[in-house]
Image (cartoon, rainbow, N blue to C red; front, side, top):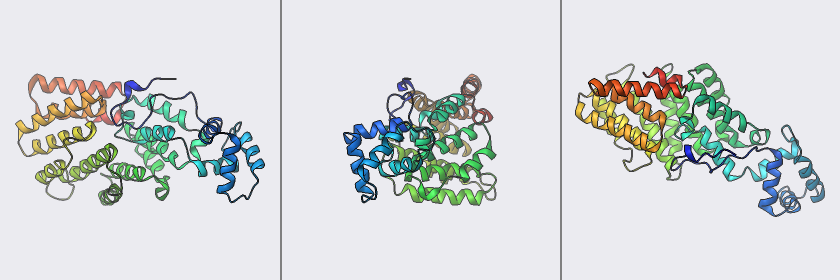
Length: 328
């Protein structure tokens, strides 16, 4: 098993280790541990199904499921509907499908390998499989494969998603069409804001809010059909909690830096750029650090600017991240 402690940051929603595999045998073994025995699991499933099948036949079905390969058939679907997935597996999937997790700080080939590893029939039967699709969508975007990203995102079933995934899908979708269809992008940002209001207060909510702010402010800083409103963008970035998780704090510093730079307030912008680089670096957010270095390269002068640009390009190259590379 691979230790992932070295890529985890505070608030990253995943457990400490990856198992060797997770499919139907592991689902059944988990249910035995959870419920005490295979017979107890069969009893619970029979009761939930109002005893339409007898307990003995359900237990036999569970024994067959333990050796299943494919989608698990009827009883695979019933088991996942009744019991879902283990909390640690659900958290791990969400970690891979969330842009603000440190999954996106891994090189793109590693992300592709992990997404393939977790794309198992038992997981595909669950609502949490959406995180695999969101993870792949993000990977396509990092590789600048926009058509593939759009096609995959269009297949995601919105009403069935967990609340956090609905916000994630709306934000990713808005980013995807931000230049080609500004009206659709704005509509998706409104959708994300609506779902954000339903989430419990948490680091994830703070990071999702920071991302929503960043995308709304982008439309203020670089509008296509009206005069930019840099002061409004600055005000919006200041709504991000300065005491929040590192990802959110970094987006706050970075966004303020760009807004202040565009207002000609260079000294303030430079301070925000340096703070953004530091927060991202301290938290181990490589992609954010590269973005912060891009800002620093823009607002600094001389050797500091040249060094920042070179460091940012090197991070982007090491992550094999075409989208990040294009920023430089």
